[in-house]
Image (cartoon, rainbow, N blue to C red; front, side, top):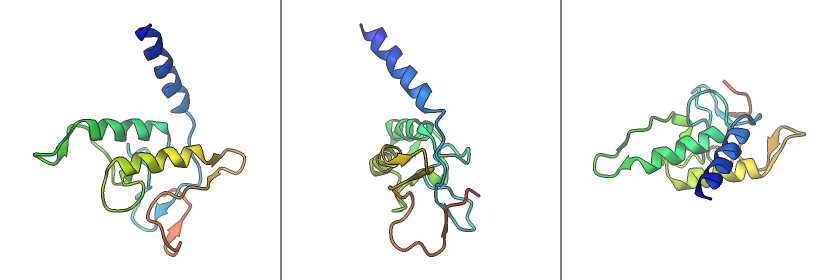
Length: 121
């Protein structure tokens, strides 16, 4: 029974990992794509998996993790990489409209849109 559950979970993760998100926000001139945890210039469900692994292997004594992440891991733009970034990424995908290629949930810092571009750098 346990093996079946793990198999189904892995199949779901693999299926969702091939769904790229378009229309993500990039900090203008920095090359940082908010939500791009693994640095592949796309925001996919693989980024959620990488961020979960980063936090699971985080050592609070040394303030490091054995899992590497890119600057885009700070999906909500608050200056911290934490569980709130996982929540923002999950909400981003839950509200993603594949017909328009956009989500109602914005990645990166909240506030005005000045200096932001939906273009992927």
